[in-house]
Amino acid sequence: MTNDKLGLLSITLASCLVGYQLVLPRTALAQRQPSPWLELYQTNSSYDNTARPPVQRTTGGSRGLVCPISPAYNPLAIPLVWSNRPLFMWQVKEGEQIGKFELWQHVTQDVVWSKPVSSSETTLLYDGEALQPGERYYWVLFNEDSVTLYRLAFQMLDQPTRDRISSDLMTIEAQLQEEGASAEEIVYAKAEYFATRQMWADVLQQAYSVENPSMALTDFLEITSQQFCSG
Image (cartoon, rainbow, N blue to C red):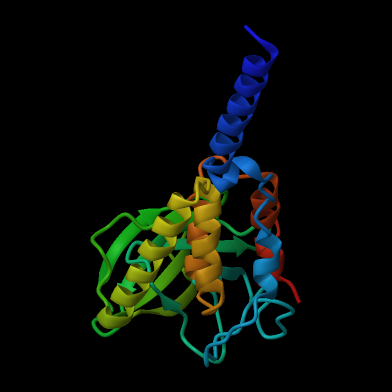
């Protein structure tokens, strides 16, 4: 093969490699940074919502024997929840014995879901029939003697608002999947969406849904009780 042909072949191969690199997914060309989970607690809301983020709370804290984390206590507004199968979280004063969790319908006070829990449990994912849009519920913790330790109301979003958020979340997921984002990056984007709306129950539910959390997410989950139960 002549030198001219070798030179032409080298140029052709180089062109092919450049072309291949240009069509690689963006995620393969750039080193992805960890999602800044801890920054969610400093998220500024662009919405007129009286439910403020749990940063530097003065009225929250550990109220008596139980500190509710999700849905959290707020003296200004009943917490709004998007998920119709929410995650419940709490922290209990050391030495207190927990025996049972119940979910009540607000108007009728009927028990719609009940689960035995132990004092070592601090999270519970609702697995009953989907909660109804626009309805208000109470979640209630009892000690081993069936004495009520805490009762807190939360409000499900109305159907039009819930549908709009569901559509937004599907759009976010589709866009990030197209960009090659990881499962945790997609979850983070959804959590950030809820954080801007001060919907912390849904932020935490998204965060706890990740099967193999990164170190950044693990740190976020570890300081959750400090954010909601200190001050």
